[in-house]
Image (cartoon, rainbow, N blue to C red; front, side, top):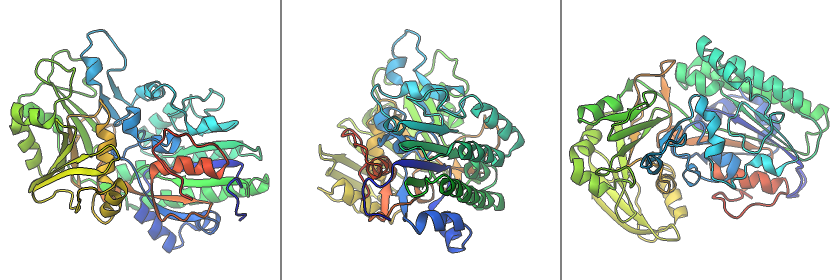
Length: 476
């Protein structure tokens, strides 16, 4: 490979939704992903990537496409509640969201004005089975009109393998030798097969193997049209999954605490004092009305004073790993069954204050003046990789709940209203769901990265100007 930063004139980004880092590593060691090994790893790099919290489809796509954390963009989960807009009595379509259904088409409108996605940096751009399409025309979004038909029939038949096949064939037909091209394609079968069985089920593993076959055929097409050497190929995942054995009905728990609860899909309510928004099933935002108004968030001290029974009730649940809240002074508290940790960050995102009571639920030895990179490195060998940054980015948004509930591995937080019963979950802050692969056909020095780093790295390797207002850094 030529040692040139501007070597690649086009980019192909493939998202294997739900692919776990450890599963990809094992399959590579067993030589079951020969095309990925030959065309990506042998030419480039394979590294571990830490995704975002909540680790769920949609919000976890945004770092790849924008270089920003979901909290910065106000997309704090697959479902969210905007308390400030709810305080306004005037009707608004932007008070709540569930990107699981037709409202996914609103995500582009929900992004802050001026948000520039990766598509915008290339002259020729093509999208497949991804609903974050700001700036694309109908012609450039190749599956815009058929995406929901594909999803509906796949869910009904419990077979998303044919969706992967459709995405592959559509992409194969478009790949060309045009310079300054960008292709983004989402392959959902690994994720959906995991949900219907578990992450290590035979059918799930077969989805990885089939994806590898598709990668091989896509590379053959690039070779045939003369675009192989000048097309940067990157394979990523948005989250991992863990097997789910038990479900906690979070809405029912709040109702037992005498709350009137607002939640999807029963959203046509006028009088309520709590809202529950579950993401990926293993993480949830809980919003509690602050006195008589939804105008302001309810900090931990107010929650403790207003209803400590709710906090202790949540923590005592076997399905709950820990909960997190924002404090009155802008810090963060994480409470587990045996103790808690409170911390504040200064303007440079270094630890400025820290207090541990009982057993530290995060199991990270944080110290005053630890920078965010030190916090990141200290967290990598724990069950909560990059937890400090992820809580910071999430609590930076008004759309984040007053209480974040993190489910324990083996459990999730939603019982009713799933079209297909889930046997695996994601969304939580835990190692198996947060660690995902990056495979890229360029040699990188980094061994581990965050998902926000993919965006500037692709721009750098294709000779594009990197914007200043992003969260990621170039992995070169």
